[in-house]
Length: 404
Ligand code: FES
Ligand SMILES: [Fe+2]
Image (cartoon, rainbow, N blue to C red; front, side, top):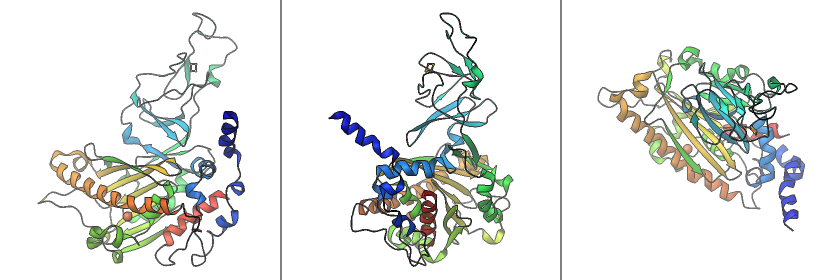
């Protein structure tokens, strides 16, 4: 009996999209917004669908798995689990960040199970095979019998760790597990061009992670896509963020639809720098003076939301845990070391982090509410407001196109 249950449980892994849901429901997403439906319930409630999405979205695209400032020193390493795929994030001796599959090439033991600082090698706890930080296999103790650490017919160079295609951009670690996406530089170019009125490549290097009030995590009981959808729109400002709406109202926002379709979001024209007495954060040096009150909030598909302001930057990235559980990771950056870590601006950083945490907490009810509603068999993907929901529709189209 047990064997039968196990078989049924594993069987979803080989399913096609057509086995999981009616493909017509996915096709209905990619229509003009007036006639389009949203993604169907299965995209939020089905384990089999998540398995499919893992391959089509998380392995095929440039996916975020962390930030560089969480492994600041050479030898810093941490494991990450991308929907069951075990990975290692490590900073090598030249300070370069690398991502490897977290598995020993000998008998497949998972190499690293908690964050640590490694001195010289990644050593497998099972039989002590050791790899350097570039993934080369260095030592194979007793491979040729007791006290014989070489074996003539064994070619070490073929048993290195398997490295994942990785790119760091504004401290964000992107990976392309299947090595099949366009180059990251091409991928990010439309956004960099959009933001060239705010920051250039040199300015990107100015951001520094704050050590004191620089990060927080939130566990939410919903599918990761709801966080992206909610982030893309300002439609919910008056209802979900009444306080924020008083200072930067729905009228002060504009839509952002990045083309080609890789990102979407919203901008505000009413951003006010935090000021206490004569204390304020340093600003990006090349930001257009007429746009100092602009701030932009962009979801870069699939799983990272970024916020750019004249005096700070944040990265709010999503760790999908299951079809209805997500870990949200917030990381905050300032311009230059004084703003990021100077003692006299600590209160300001605390207040800024508090502000964003409150906003993100307010959003949890909204995104969990959508998850709860998606259990209804009466819901068919719903509709979009042709005016207010354009960026959300854009994200749905991106998902739909990548599924088929
Ligand atoms: S499995 Fe890693 S050394 Fe044997
Ligand atoms: Fe919100």
